[in-house]
Amino acid sequence: MIEKRGDFNSTWIDPDEALELDDEWLEGAHKYRGDQLVKRGRGRPPLEKPKEAVKIRYDQDVLEAFRESGKGWQTRINKALRQFLAEHDVNELDQQ
Image 1 (spheres, rainbow, N blue to C red):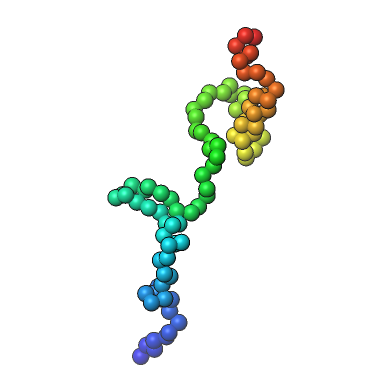
Image 2: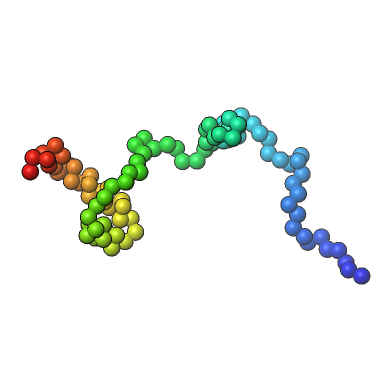
């Protein structure tokens, strides 16, 4: 005869032990209007100046040089462009 053991994993949760859904919990919850997400709860706060995804074309040798520098090459391109802007007047580039 097979003996039953009590060492099994149960996923059942007693509803009387569930967390209370108070105002603080509801404030952090995702909010939907139908199937559309209206507000995300908690998580990362929105950036003051978020980055924008763009499609841009660079010379192949420029890309290869940055890619060969390893992980974070796109951030280094952004940093190089910032440094260039600090040192040059972009409006004068067309006149050269």
